[in-house]
Amino acid sequence: MIPVGLTEAHRDKPDPATYLGSGKIEEIATAAREAGADVLIFDTPLSAAQERNIEKAAHIAVLDRTELILEIFQKRAKSREGRLQVELAKLEHLSTRLVRGWTHLERQRGGLSKTGGPGEKQIELDRRMLSERVKQLKVQLKKLERQRDTQRRSRTRGDQMTVSLVGYTNAGKSTLFNRLTRSDAYVANQLFATLDTTARRCWVGGSEMVVLSDTVGFIRDLPTQLVEAFKSTLEETVHADLLLHVVDASSEVREDQIDSVNQVLSQIDADTIPTILVYNKIDRAPAAAGVVRDEKGRIRSVGVSAVTGEGLDELRAAIMEFAEHWHKDHPVKARELEPWEQAKLEAEARRAGKPTA
Ligand SMILES: Nc1nc2c(ncn2[C@@H]2O[C@H](COP(=O)(O)OP(=O)(O)OP(=O)(O)O)[C@@H](O)[C@H]2O)c(=O)[nH]1
Ligand SMILES: [Mg+2]
Image 1 (cartoon, protein in one colour):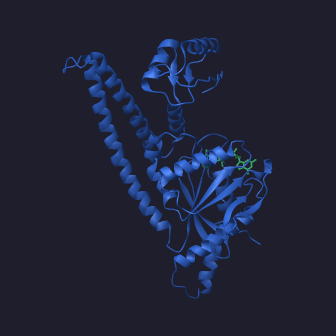
Image 2 (cartoon, protein in one colour; image 1 turned 90 degrees about the vertical axis):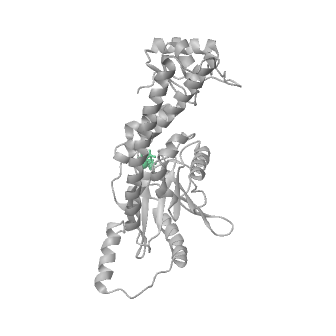
Image 3 (cartoon, rainbow, N blue to C red; image 1 turned 180 degrees about the horizontal axis):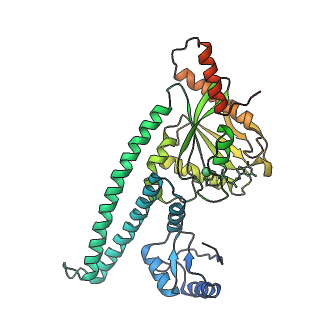
């Protein structure tokens, strides 16, 4: 998709039928025709009726914000689970549209006849096929979810803290993940580069390792259908002992982005998990490296650059501090390690990002 034009419109109250006024729609339609555009994208959710009415008035296809996000997710989805989750979200979205179209038809008929015409039959059929497919998808996803659960249990040995990277899309989570775990998760200057959760062991100090997960990025007004469909991927986050909330410190709207992320976190019941704010990209922001504490001495935020590596030692130390507290609540029987076990642990730590001094 290549953008060919951008228009802003200010209205106190959106028109219930067409969202914008007819003059504005006319203006946009003309601009779109001149630019040779194939589709109009609205950066706001539209009702099914609004979308249809604008399409009719402007003679051009219309996508709303929810549909745009769904399209991008569909492009990015690579794993089987990711593809199924996106398909589910799209169908759930479609079904809300069909239902609306349905009540719209019913209203037109004024409730005069119970036996509908062909329009009604078609919608009924579509709806039945849709709900069949939705059922299938949910069964398949449930199966994958159980596998994921088993994997998670086998990964977390019980004596290792789990840490999840969360944050606005494009904040630099995957870059940080790669840097901390010496891996090569996909990094790109685009929205929703990551759709699947990856987890690796990550060394944070001494012989301490945590399980670090890289997750899907959030965005303002993330469609609820997507949050629903991605629940099992997001579960990884919900089960974490600690969240690193990665923020693009160089963004002018970073505070809004923090709010949006917090909103999604509360949607998935992850807002009570201890969190460190990680201000990333300080190489191009006026933010400082290092730890900021609140008045009680608790860690609030850490400034880092995942690209230059600045602040990463402090970040590891901050995680280590949490890990020490965590171990107090999760004691395991300690015993003296054999030399070969010590060597094995050391090798593991090096693979998990411990620098060779
Ligand atoms: N200057 C600078 N750029 C960074 C830094 N960290 C990440 N980036 C860039 O920011 C862009 C996004 O990075 P990603 O790691 O893919 O971001 P993400 O948070 O994983 O994004 P999603 O997976 O889409 O949610 C890439 O172009 C990175 O190179 C940093 O510390 N400094
Ligand atoms: Mg990513």
